[in-house]
Length: 440
Ligand code: PLP
Image (tube, rainbow, N blue to C red):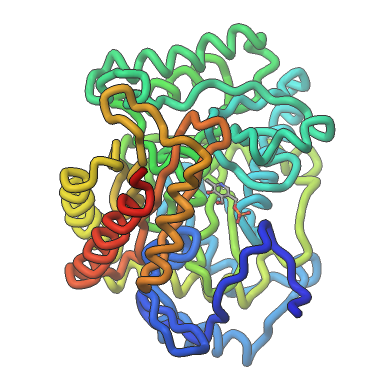
């Protein structure tokens, strides 16, 4: 009998060890980690340089409470992180995960509004579908009913606009008019809410598991930034999944040359070596909050030297191994392979993503974009088949069928062409078996 409980009662084999892109269970079965855990292990498992840096830090100290001591490790990681962010974003606040980081961004934005005499501003606009975390504040801006609806009475309802799913709306994502069309929804929502009540817009630059690696249409990200500026609304980029090289840039915002007010990081930031997250904010924003009395927020484990030493070593490894570039090159190669799977498997209705943040979506019919019936549970069945075949992928289905089933294929950024072949061959076999199982 296990004493643990999680989201579901499904039990999986017991993990023994993990190296590079592979993981082994206690029976010696090998799995290729085709989703980097939950899009976390960007530099692969058991990287010697990171383990060495952690060991060295552990021998010095593992914890120093931030109100008692500064640590070299946290200063070093903050400096390295700021150097990778846009000009003027030099202030870093550490936490231990993505939800904590999103909470921190929301509260920093609110305190900034108070500090600059805009107490009216408290509404946060986000998108649906979206995922920003499971704590109540992050959940309030998450657009994903299966996770939020039970907790609705306990959360302050926050306004949502549709995520720009051009492929479902029959629009061309490469036509600038499409980006403008979806961005106009943000402006309309700000006006409907009352511009002087809107605090921030929170957005995943490339969608994560909620949308299945949705890439925004041309012009969309630049346009939402302009709209935020025009209305004095802070732009918060949730780069929890897209950050740390995943999309072929260190930060996804580089694809569009964006200058947000706050960037949110976790997952690949410490690549699974230790729980870590951060927000990086504009200098003047933090200055106003500090001059207003300080940030009324903080978690006990935040900024501990062990986590920061691991994070700094991860950033070094991303640079030393050229992983941002590898994500771009291997991402393009994997995308080609997924496109070719789509030509062979009619169940795949769409392939999308950027860098190594890739996904494909199942559809009952490509023309109408109709999703598969939920009762088929196709996404979970595919995951179970690939698991049996020694490949781990990550899947999601929205309950109302709006987004259908999608499978995230997001291996560590250290993958080679050979790994990609292994991933594609296994997916090919699994999709063939799934089609057979689903046949009437
Ligand atoms: N934001 C995004 C975009 C995410 O993908 C996630 C997790 O999947 C989170 C926030 C929450 O992160 P965590 O699970 O570390 O709390």
